[in-house]
Amino acid sequence: MDFEFRGVRGTFPTPEKDRSRYGGHTTCSSLRLGPNDYIVVDAGTGLRGLGDRIMSEAGAADIRVDLLLTHFHLDHILGFPFFAPLFSPRAVVTVHAPGDPRDTQSALAGLMAGRYFPMELGRTVARKEFREFEPGTPSGSVRASSCPLRHPQGSVAYRLETGGSSLVLATDTEHPESGVDERLAAFAAGADWLVYDAMYTPAEYDAGKRGWGHSTWLAGTRLAAAARVGTLVLSHYNPAHTDADVDRILEAARERFPRTLAATQGLGLGKE
Ligand SMILES: [Zn+2]
Ligand SMILES: [Zn+2]
Image (tube, rainbow, N blue to C red):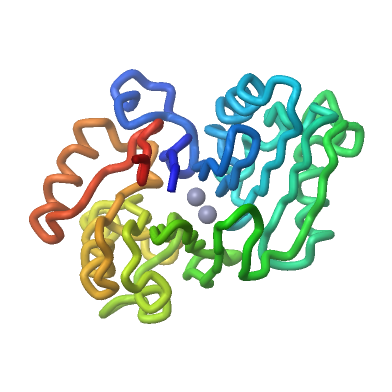
């Protein structure tokens, strides 16, 4: 597995210097299957740099990208119009998302329509396909599956399995009042990595963030223990949190679940 975080921030990009060590781009990650073949999860602002890298790696070769969207909140799609392969005649970009693919297409086309963007999606030269996500093999030898999450307007977790490794991304989900989300625990069971929504501290959550669809590092440690995952990876950071805040969150989480990492932009998982 050759997985890399391209954006680890939730809600809104953070160019501030005191948030740059963990990274300011919104959520996007990639699984590289070959020089011109990628599975990408979410199209936050981190997608732009990935697109540029794919183009420079590919040279004159054909490019294949399977983009798996978890949902359509802006922090998960804002990089889409700036994804260089869309403008390459050698690229095939297949967008997989929950629900009717016509809705997916119109949501993404809307980002590039009218006054929002200089080039309409329909005029970009890549071959584009829109599909309702179905469990199976979107690309290469990777098996993907999904699980609904507790989030306003809905979101999903994805599980990616390849070469004996498994990774679950659950970046936008609210934990239940008590216990853990049993459906998600079953879905993440035994995964090598569980990437989890660390948007709020427990104190912030209790002070008025119930119902906003996000979770805490503490709920993440409970879920990681219940699902017996190898490593908990905190991500989807609050834009208000500085690097020092995330350092403290990581330290607190490690006291509960020692095998915890905090995702940084550019962090790779599963590379040999
Ligand atoms: Zn989000
Ligand atoms: Zn969301």
